[in-house]
Image (cartoon, rainbow, N blue to C red; front, side, top):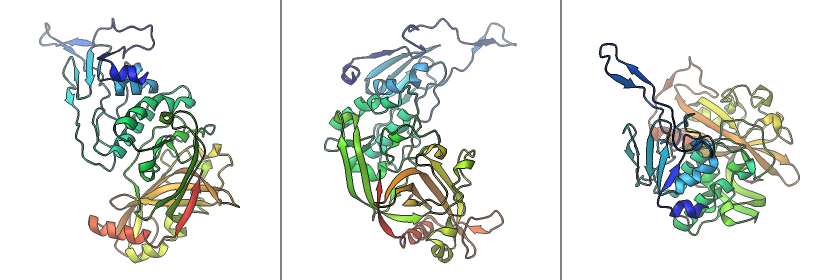
Length: 401
């Protein structure tokens, strides 16, 4: 099916139709109003915006574009004519146009390497294939899917094209790519939905049920290594299906065990911003906070799923660790994992933690209060201090399933 769209001369999309019976043409007229001082002139209300950038909400008048299965059809088509409710739109590999010219744009086909895909438009291409894949997953996972089992098949044609043209020698593994797996592992979601029946290893974004996935510019330290990556392939390569999958990382670890702030019974806070606020009081970096005059300005935890639905259930006091990563600035964070077996320690990913640091005027630890004086440190200062915080952390082999 992917070949049909990729090799078609033009794709005609019934974008305003709810189903195959809706057709291309709409009988609705644009909303207009007469000018009081010029009764012979009418002004048309501004139409709904076509979703031409990654974070754009799809208008209710364009139901076709909400469907995840349509994503690869739209992405692979060389040229598409969208029949909307009030006008026709043109979309191709180089630009976008509408009848009223309000959203006419040319895609950026030479975007340089970026830390993340924030700010990129729908048709923008990236020199960095890692960032381009993150952009693709973010766009794709924001759409609706009826069956969770379709999560990999509904993007398989895009994967096939990338394998042929951009990542020829790479291996696609359950939504991640082997050559960029350390970066691909650092995804997060904010939807906090129930954990589905296991369809993928917990370290893959495919394990997060109907959730929009994003990357926020975090990278593991240069010392982090993949010790082993084991799995059994199931089905065609472009589906990325696997069983018995596990990954072992050698990574800086911060022990979060004993945090009663990570309380699954109080998950009504959408951002879970109250969790881990006292991270420095129980963490191995306490002394480094004192030495560096650093405090936590903001911290927030994004669970991969509603922890009350975990099996085994999440309980405060269980072994929880942070696999430390950082941004290019002053933020640290990373993957949060929970130990699920003791004899041969295995871990399951449960979420992503972000911690924003600030320089304080006096030596102290813990979360910065509103009354506590802070000072603006240079980017170079904060980068050095953050590195000093991470450097003494123990390197551990952590097996995630």
